[in-house]
Length: 382
Image 1 (cartoon, rainbow, N blue to C red):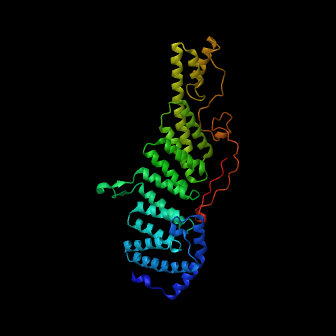
Image 2: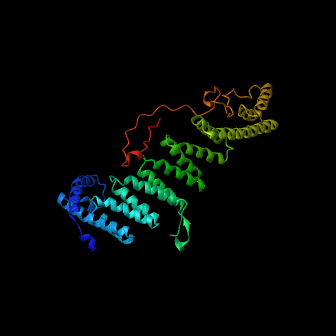
Image 3: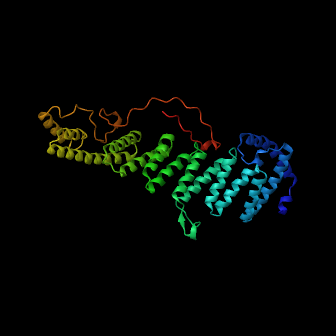
């Protein structure tokens, strides 16, 4: 046994007794709630036994701290692991578990560090180190997106696999869904999926940020990402174009002062002009083929405000004069997106659907054990 483990001065005795007294209630509550899973951890000792364990854990922890400060990381990690294994109900167990993660992190073994912090989160939810462990996990995962490692077959440098990084970000969001790291983690999931060509999955992640964290700054960025992803996809489908248009309209309405709103208006306007011209040409094709009903449908789908709208209306008049039954009853005219000073006040504004009736208020969600300034509650759905 390390000689340092046999040293304990008088001030340390007093500290140990005080710590043991305050930690006994916590240890019992941990065991009752089943937070500590191992059989050894579920057997809560009496106060006298726990005081002995606190004293032994303190000596071991201090020995590990000294080894760590001396640069003997392997030795320190071994002692920390002994503290967690032998004294799981003491106040030093979560501290030791945290230091194990910190050592792995210092050694560059970040995957192991992430898992060590996860062990702390899983086993010691009431620890003051919970929030810091989540923060460390987020930083590790962010680095894993870009940092090359050599811990692969053949020692060939390689970035972390996207699937593993996504898994880590999802774990962070699950660990602390009310912390500031949750929307950041979910947003990054969307970014990664977009980079690897999984567009539906990326949209789902960005939508989760918008819907679950509407007041977070990342919600606006997630909305833009959704628009960009849909804009990059094939928009020949009319339904796809309408959905894209609705999302642009919602962003413009909610972010009038954002300079990107003007860019989106201009971009969407050009797209709608192209779509209108295409529909007009299809209408002309069917008209020449003698299918007047199909031609009329395409002419009616040309948006008001586009360059060919007038020509489409002229063709509808010609068709109606030939056969009044060819042209369907007038429908609500859809307008091309333009750039007025206040879009939502326009009488012909074609924007998002009306809001749904408010849902019944959900039961309060349990609070996460994170620092008070690190909490971002999810508003009730409306």
